[in-house]
Length: 124
Length: 503
Image (tube, rainbow over the protein chains, first blue to last red):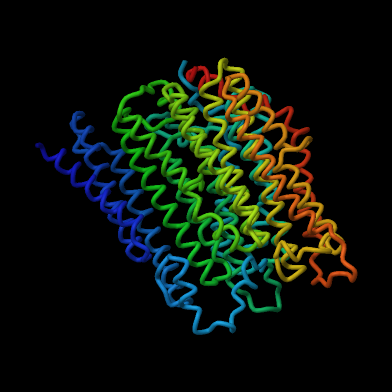
C-alpha cells in the first residue's frame, strides 16, 4: 500500500466519522465539530487527488491546492458563523440542542410569560 | 465543436451585473447603518439595466454571452457565461429583488432621528449578498466557481432566518446552516473527484469529455445529494418550514422565492449541461420520484397547518418537487425539440414559483401585520379589511395551482405534454394530483378570508404602498403565461451545443 492510498483511506474514514456525527448527534456543538472532521477528510482526499499533478513534475496539482485552500477558508468562516449562532441560541434559550423539544423544556418555567405562538412569523 | 470561450460582444455587461451588487455590499458595510438601505435601493436600477443589457445581447446575437476573466482561456482561466437559462433566471431575480426591496422599506427602515438598529443594516446588506451570490451561480462557467457561489448564497441566506433573534429562529438558522454546510462539503468532494477524473472543472469541457465511469457516477451522486440538501428536496426538507416561516416576511420571500433556486440551478448545470450525455433516464426517474414525494407530502402537510406562514412554507416544499420533474422528461425525451420543451417547462416553473411564492409570503406578512395573527381559522373578514392583499394572495395562488394564464399553467402544460410524448404517464398523475392539492390549500385560506363577518374586523393599518407592490408582483406571476410565450426560445439560446452534445 503506497502512501497515497493510505492517505486516501484515512481521509475517507475521517469523512465517514464526520458525516455520521453530523447526522446522529442532536447537540449543535458536536455537529459543528463533526462538520470540521468531515471537512478535514475531504481536504485530505483532495490532497491525494492532487498527486495526479506529480506526473507533470509538480509536487502537487495547483488547481486542487487552490480548491483545498478555498475550502479551508470557507469551512473556517462557516464554523465561526455556526458557533456565533450557537452562542446566541445558548444565551437566548439556554440550550445547545437542535431538538425542538429542547426549546419547550426550557420554556416551561416561564410558561405564560411568553405567548409562544403569538410571535411566530412576525413581519418586523 | 468546442464551446465558445472567448469574450463576446456585451460580455462586459456580465461583469457589471456582478459588480453592482458586490460594490453595493462593500459600500454598505463601509457606510453601515442607514446607508445600507439607500445603497441597496440605489443599486437596483443599474443592476436591472445590466441584466437587461445581457438579455438584449443574448437575443440579438442568438448565442451565449461570454466574458473571459483576465483574458485567460479555460481550463486555466475561468469564464462568466450567460446562456438563455441564466438570462431568464437573472431577469427573474432582479424583478423579485426589486419587489422585495420596495416592500421591505416599511419593515426595515432606519429613519433619521431614531437610534439605528442592527436589523435594517443586516437585512439590506444580506439582500445585496443574496443578489450577488445568485448572479454568480447563474453566470459561473465552472464547477468550482459554482462551489464558491453556493457558499456565498448560504452565508447570505442563513442570517436572514434569524433577523429577529428569537430562540426558535436561531435554532432554525443553525439547522439550516448545518444542512447547507453538509451539502457544500458533499459538493466539494464531488468536484474534487471530477477534477481527478477529467483534469478540468469547466462545464463546457466536461460536456465534451463526459463518460459514464465509476468516478463520474460517484461524484455526481455526491454533488447531487449535497445540492438536494440545500434545495430542501424531500426527504431533506426538514430544515425549510421552520426557517422560512420564522423569518420576517421580506426575508421569507427572498429565501423561498430566490435562494433555493440557486442550488436547483446547479443541479440543472450538472445533470443537463456537464453530464447530460451520460445521465441515464433511470437515474433521473429517481430524482423525479423524490420530487413526486415532495409534492404529495408537502401539499398534504400544508393542508394541515393552522398558521398561514407555515402553510406557505410547506407549499414551498411541495413546489420544489415540481422543479425536479423536468429531469426524466428532458433525459427521456424522444427528440431535441421535446427535450427543449421540457427544459423550458422546468425553468418556467422555477420562475413562476419565485414570483408567486415571494408575493404569497409578503401577502401573508401583511395579513399578520394587519390582524396581529396568521391563524387560518380566524381569517374571517380579512378580504374586506385587506382587499388588495387577499387579491394578491389569490393571484399568486392561481399561479401556484397552474391555472391559465399564469406562468405555472404554461410550465405544467409543457411538462404534461413532454410526459405524454415520452410515455411517462405516471408524472401526469403526479402533476394533476399536485395541482388539486395546491388548489385545496389555497381555497382553504381564501374561503376563510372571503367569509363576511357581522362587525368589521379591527386591523392595524398596513402601508398601502406595500399592498400595491405585493399585488403587482402577484399580477406578474399570474400573467407570466402570456409573457413567457417568447422566452421559450430565449431559454434555448447558447445551449444548442450543450444540448446536442447531450443527445
